[in-house]
Image (cartoon, rainbow, N blue to C red; front, side, top):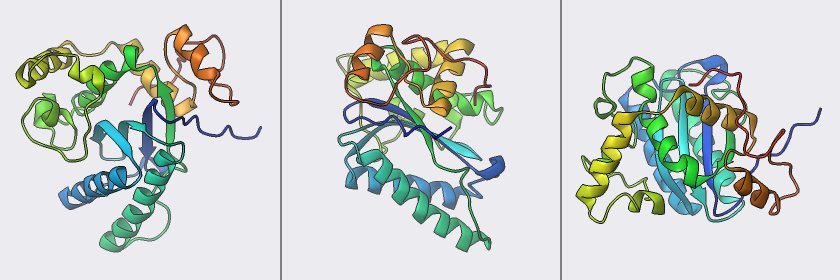
Amino acid sequence: MARLPRLTLPGHLHHVIQRGNNRQPIFGDGEDYELMLALLADNAQRYAVAVHAYVLMGNHFHLLATPTSAEGLPQMMQAVGRRYVQHFNRRHGRTGTLWEGRYRSTILDPEQYLLPGMVYLDLNPVRAGLVTQAADYAWSSHAHWLGLRHDRLLTPHMLYWGLGNTPFAREAAYAALVHGGVGSQEQAALTNAALSGWALGAPEFVEALQKHTTRRVTRGQAGRPISGKKSE
């Protein structure tokens, strides 16, 4: 069966996952993490992609992002991926592929999944046992949205602005969301949608989305979460 093209539409929230080949490490040390963040920031600006959240894990990374053009996200990911592999291979004395094929992505209904998606990314290191609190992990967007540091890669989504009328109010409200966590079903839905490429959202959102593309946006019933794969 022919592989479906990615579901990529301008002005919509995308969840992106890029994994290491055979789940091998893609970061060796802090310098690798720093370079990835710099490449993402430079190319997000170059290709007009608003990155709302991220987490860099040992063998994969996640982004929540909104491109302003149909080509912006693929161009950004291609540029970042190519440059990073050159750096990683040269620095660590290796050759060959680093990525597990092309990146995976899909479109999310922001009203349902923007804030839970941000929390899901923030808590990934906690679920993996790397830290006990999200704030202890250096390689995610969590500290920026709590006002603990400024991250040039990030652009606030309007739904984050809606958390409060002042920076303090937004940061406190977001901290409360992270403290509350994300349920296992939402975790699975977010991961599986990105890995499968099917849109995730309310039925009316998915129905409206389908009108903007000839590519089918769901496997089955609109807005129905796909289950079966373990969250990561």
